[in-house]
Amino acid sequence: MAGQVCFPPLVIRDDSLKCFVKIGAGGFGQIYRAKHMKWGMDVAIKLLIYKDGSTSSIHKEANLMFQGGNPNVIRIFGLYEGRVGELQLPLQSGLVMELMPKGSVAGLLQTLAAPPPWPLAFRMAHQIGLGMNFLHHLTPPLLHLDLKPNNVLLNDSLDAKITDFGLSRVAQSVSKCARERDEDEGGTLSYMPPEALQSINYKASKASDVYSYGVLLWSIITGKEPYDGAVSSLVRFRIPLGDRPDVTLIDCGQTEGLEDLVNLMKRCWDQDANKRPTFLNCVNATEKIFELHQRGLSDAVWDVLKQLEGDICSSLKSVQISRKPQNEVRPPVLSCVTGSLPKQETAAGYTNTVKKEPSPRPDALTPPRTTQRQTSTPGGFYINMSNVVGVQFGNNNSMNIVQKPRQRHRTAPSRVNTSENAQKKP
Image (cartoon, rainbow, N blue to C red; front, top):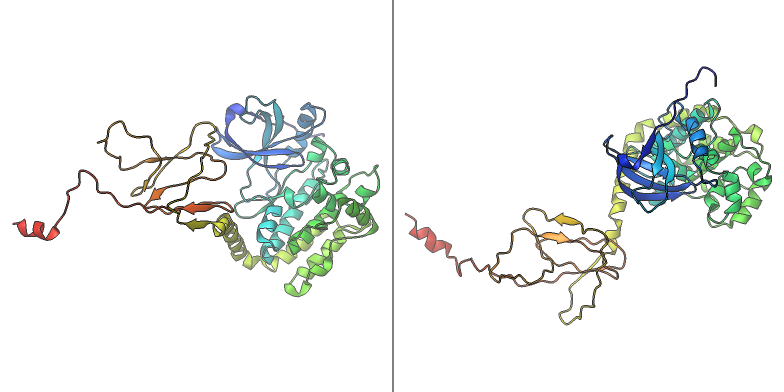
């Protein structure tokens, strides 16, 4: 492109990263979290699956994904080449991106089991439109071709950012992938335009992304997955015939501006691609709707963040605490330890009692603080503690708390009479 200077993307390797943790997987590969030692920050690494086994296509197409920047498009720091901390794995390639700690819109809808509060829902709709409008106005335009709730990520403030844009060209065709793996890619199939399902000679366009955006709006408004439970082959057959997600689930009288958003949604998924609006038209409409609810945004975000934090502790409801019968025979336990045992010191003023080998010195003093060693035990585990509150996560688990008689330390006096001591003082 004349007048534009393209710099080669930065290549980031394992010698700059540590603490690899797998956090998810998508249609294009696995996703890891790692810490960049020189930058001092956590990043996300998306490994890419490609059929030719080479990295040439990634290097060639990655330049399209580094043009400019937009607050509603995921930021890409560079290319990744490495083994994600495992020397026995083959060399792999991918992208190093900013980490989005609150997951995806799909995960949010699943956690809430309902649509987000209206101010947040309308902001999501607007931010997604802004991000897509930016991608479509690059030179050349960058099509997404797989826009869906899983590919919209959320930061700590629940701002929406688009990810996986352009990866269909880097890795493999989304439409072809969906045809090969209908059962695995049912979600992607639900967001594909009818023209992509009608002909193998389908040529993607901006209108393809607009259709997916319309279905995505329906998911945000209803909090549901389109065609949930339907057989993928039936979905493939019915969408080209004009079937769309159920609009009767939406009560437009619930809040101001919702009817306008529903009308925009219907225009976006029009059967005729030429009648669908551009993303600039979408942004102009969603901006006006969002402004009606902007005052309630802070409270809406705060409410959802509290629900997300509460979801972490939701498994506490399944914890059962019972006293262990005295005559119970404890089954043999096989400890399965991988790598070095993690250590966790107890808080000041508390003591953890753990199983120890007999001390070679009977008169050895017990240290005031001990270290709890954790092991992974198939089939369950036992924890004995004193003066602590124990919490166990998981389903169908139980915690046995054994009350043991208090024992006087051998160096302590047999009896303490505070009244006599007070009389002896001058």
